[in-house]
Image (cartoon, rainbow, N blue to C red; front, side):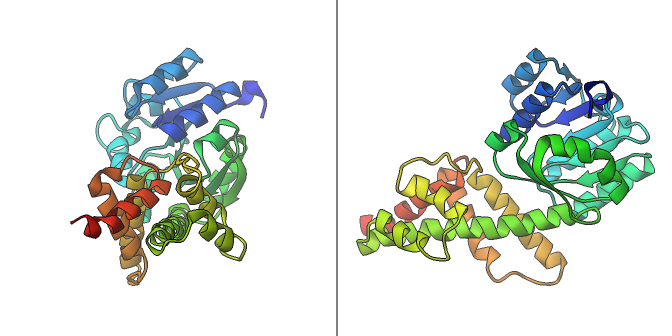
Length: 302
């Protein structure tokens, strides 16, 4: 896509992932309107690179060809979509609105109906990988919605992602992401407990990792947890325990809506919830090792 044909992007939510995406798109010379969620410094940085700050979501939607939302919860997405200053109130007919976050599929479908009534289009396109990948345009993107809508925005998505998939109708992206995160966070939580249990049994963490990683259990998620447990670096997976707990909660809600209560997800959600209530919520998921180690040591300290 040539610079003169680049669509105007309206980007809402400049957290760690969102600000990295915005920085990359600005480097590619996309015209950009931005609206902050929490991090004022990210807005200032985007404006310094040429973005225009909008006063509210309605103003941003009216000035953009593609609106991208990258925020934390379905409730936050809904607050940005609805109301007199929301995206739906200001969106122009033909505008594409995309949710890059991880939301409840049923909420996504309801928003899609409201946007269609306003003459706009809606896609869910949750992301995989890290903010470091986002800065280089190397994300994984699970895009869902009408095929014609995907074809229209695919060039933009390919400027953001290395692996871009069309996975089905509206809501399918969020469904896949919740399944993905259920598995990934369960794996990370189980690996964290394994390291902490090894401590109690007198087994060196490095030895446990060497044995487990030599077989079919080895994975990138294992290495993220090992980086903290063995090497003392908790930063390899930039995803907070609070976000993981939220996603497991959404997965459990989704499973109930499908009349199939999960056997495994409630246990993972409980571990993450207890860690969050114990003050670990803002820390990244590999720090679950430290939570388990402290929790296991607590009975001996009484």
